[in-house]
Image (tube, rainbow, N blue to C red):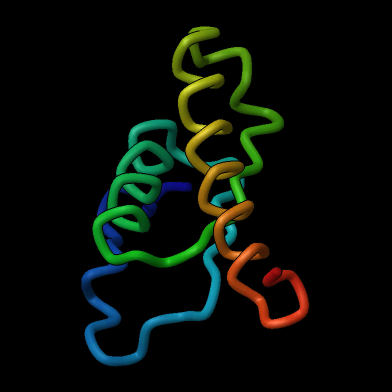
Length: 83
């Protein structure tokens, strides 16, 4: 958590992960990771658990629903989900 604010997904350049797990650490870093995942079109799992007490209801709902929308569209793009 001490260095989370100094890290960025942009540092990965050409070695992008298939999925990112955003787990509890520095709240500002968690916000930035969500934005970076969206900008870089990387699916992510959002797990705020211990940081829930530091977030507003709106922040929590917004980030969780963004993750759900991205996950849903990723699942629906799988060959066996197409109609």
